[in-house]
Amino acid sequence: MGKALDGVRILDFTHVQSGPTCTQLLAWFGADVIKVERAGAGDITREQLRDIPDVDSLYFTMLNHNKRSVTIDTKNPEGKQVLEALIQKCDVLVENFAPGALDRMGFTWARIQELNPRMIVASVKGFGPGPYEDCKVYENVAQCAGGAASTTGFDDGPPVVTGAQIGDSGTGLHLALGIVTALYQRTQTGRGQRVLAAMQDGVLNLCRVKLRDQQRLERTGVMKEYPQYPNGKFGEAVPRAGNASGGGQPGWILKCKGWETDPNAYIYFITQAPVWAKICNVIGKEEWATDPDYATPAARLPRLKDIFAEVERWTMTKTKFEAMQILNKYDIPCGPILSMKEIAEEPSLRKTGTIVEVDHPTRGKYLTVGNPIKLSDSPTEVKRSPLLGEHTDEVMAELGYSPEQISALRTAGAI
Ligand code: CAO
Image (tube, rainbow, N blue to C red; front, side):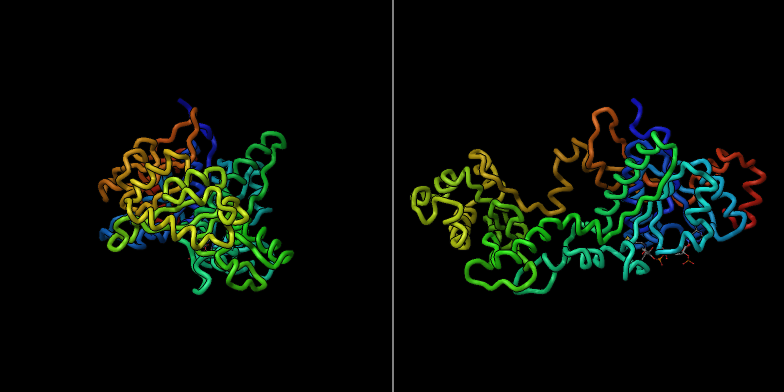
């Protein structure tokens, strides 16, 4: 069966995490992704957080599946010519260098258009145009500047960053959507365009509900579903809300059986209004279903702390999986706090290809996260990441270079 992006060629100039997650997705959808790296060194993540000496790290392998790797010194004049040939042959150039790096290399937007007017140039940057546009940015900087950190954590503690890589992988996803959209528009216009996904913007997009709450707070001075209500104080900005649900259905994380020794023996419990009577039955507080102090969502809001304490008395008598099974029977929304160990061992995730075991020539077998987006007519087969420069000769031959020319370029340090 063909793949959705068969025939699309990506010149992948990305490194670290944000850009590589984007091009990995495109590769999974069938694009030919040619990753350009510096000879001898390659993407810095190849050697970061290594768990086996001299072997590509899991950081690298898990972000660069299904790609080809070529080494080119793009600051060498002959290396530049090779890159020019690639620009002429590819549909999309994706990069996440520090601001200005591509221009400094001599590949301005004007020059790229001269070489290939159909080329789409897609970039991840830390910030969009403005006071911080020249800054280098990593994940947690984006989480802080995009509003995630100020709204994550507990009210009495400092801002907290989240383990989900919303700045890097989140922005990679945004960029991938921008690229396929530009490819679609190109089918009508015949022209390429620039696509920019700034990490601050991507994080803010994912924190959209917090900007909603900022405006609600300014108008009403209070947010009744936040744990600060009714006893705490609200300031000028959206406060950290602990584990409160971001939507209109109050929720919290509750202890389950074994919590004293297992740091993940917890469940997320949602007191969804339509199933309130069932919740009361399950936890043995049948009278709350009709008690005017508890019967309506509005009446419950100032009592949420006590309500969750009562529910927790029940969840502490069950393991998170037992609680999950019982609550699901009654359609009560809840979710176990799963550890990475539990997720790695979960058979259903293996079955759907969300967790995949991959074999690598120097590393051996390892687990990775497969394509989280499933297309019925374009299934994803996860292939191992390339070794540094593994496909240089193959790609150079496709560009029309003879073996002698390739060998001369190698001697000159251009590839
Ligand atoms: N041949 C020759 N030179 C190359 C090359 C190649 N194949 N590939 C890259 N280079 C050069 C670049 O041209 C650049 O040179 P100049 O600084 O002289 O212009 C240099 O390598 C380093 O690039 P960089 O500045 O992007 O790398 P860095 O390690 O200093 O910074 C990062 C890393 C991530 C902070 C920065 O790239 C950045 O801010 N990127 C945008 C935001 C982003 O994606 N951040 C998320 C990263 S994931 O956490």
